[in-house]
Image (tube, rainbow, N blue to C red; front, side):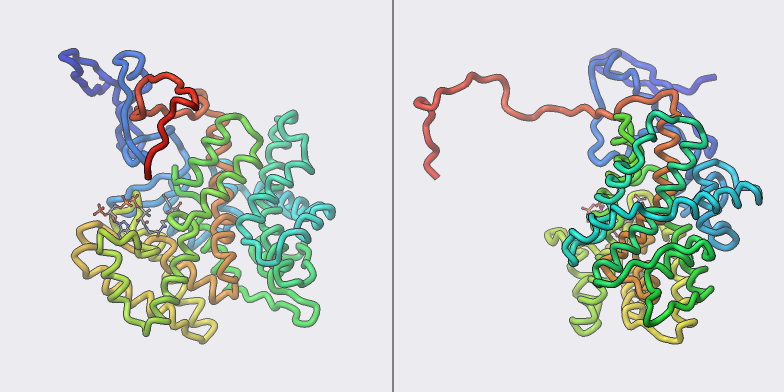
Length: 433
Ligand code: SDX
């Protein structure tokens, strides 16, 4: 028996269908609301609005659950690789050995960037933010591979996905080398996806980079934890831009730009800047907690709070464990980690944070790992983008294949001036300021 919701407007009752997901989530289907009632709904920022039905990632914000294609993210962090998790997100199933090997060969074969693209990198200012470079270069890659929309064979689509997954990693490392005025390090067929990135970032003719398997493992876990997160801001940007049927590269470039914001993926950089401010102020987090509580102060405690999680972000727990592993391996302590742990302890006991269900999110500790790896601060969000790329690709693919596809075009309620006539210049009265 179909479940319905009853809506009474101006004395008339409307029945709206209720749809239920495989995990028991329910939604009121309002797709015929305006046609039947003449009214729309209003939900700024969409906290109560579903944009699609998806089979990729399940989150339960109250219970702190996160699963990719049904597999708990903690199990993937423990047993999987970023390469394998990317395959899972995009294809829906864990790969067989042959499938994973073929995927690895594709990633390797498409890891080089067209030599002509070096000119683009050479003409960015050295201090250009790498997120701006990355979003530009992802669009630029499209220019070098124009065959995408015509050739829709599965192999062509798989090549497009592999090309993006592999080249974005290469271009991120290239942007770092150019920012330092150092020569670019090319990807090596001898190295795995994550080891290749670290080598492209840190290898040098005068100081060869030694692959540290613990660092490679930490980077795999870091990127697995960032790989997807259902309909977050940047994924929604990819779906919205993609709904106009632009090519994948343009949609991904839009996702990179959305992720850049400090209230989204840019928070990992903002957290470390906040921790450095606390350190510079003597190390006492109390003034920052006070500012975060002050409703008249727009300051937000970076790395805390989440639109969906109203408990500890399950990824933050794992990231914190990786932090401890990486720092103990390097036998060095990061004073910012000590400040972060003190800040967390104080905040989690504070009534404001308790009442608002504000807990550390993924970005709170991720910057500590990146610092330990030697990743520069302005590349922190680039690291998030590389991790989120398989999620964006899988969500874009699902939206393109969605039988209920529509161009995303929300409505509005107009609150401006009602109809009035044009006033000739001579009749306009200048406002006395
Ligand atoms: C990511 O959506 C995703 O899944 C994102 C992400 C992913 O993997 O894609 O998880 C990645 O973006 C994580 C979030 C990173 N951003 C930050 O750490 C920035 C700091 N956090 C906040 O700006 C905030 O918590 C948001 C933006 C993350 C979520 O905020 P919401 O859901 O839009 O809620 P809100 O801003 O309306 O806040 C609700 C209340 C307000 O207080 P009241 O006016 O109701 O009294 O909570 C307060 C806010 O003032 N609040 C905070 C706070 N976060 C919310 N107060 C102080 N510090 C904070 N961090």
